[in-house]
Length: 194
Image (tube, rainbow, N blue to C red; front, side, top):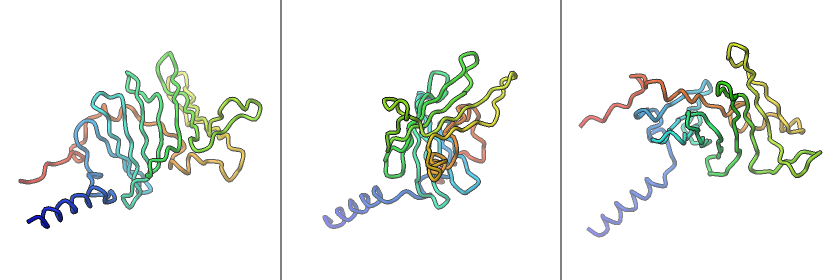
């Protein structure tokens, strides 16, 4: 009896430390606070919003189902990202990002990405930290955003596009309205049969 109990405890511990796989609910959307985005290259991103709407966590998985990145967004009262932190699968912080909005209508106009592994400074002002890149969104008079303008500040041509290589996208912006849309019936999780 005692050996059976110990065996069950070891089995449960093994499940707790086992690597995440597709069996962890990756293909499911559960309620109003989870959205799944399938990328063209086979990657998948799962967005989870806290019940108070102040934090959105994005977990990005490779095509094989392995966790590759975690992005934690801090949201303002209107549901727009104010800042985010990007971590790799080993929980090493890679980047921090801040977002700027136009005062007139609250539209996103800028993202600044900062490398958390290496402190970079401006040559002419070594006291001021330099971003890895800045993304600017130009807004036309009708309020529509154009294709973003990306300024990469890494001088080494081999490092150019480092954020995009690490993140899989040139920008970390998310659509804060994704949670406003109802969950499509095909994406709702069905309860297991009893």
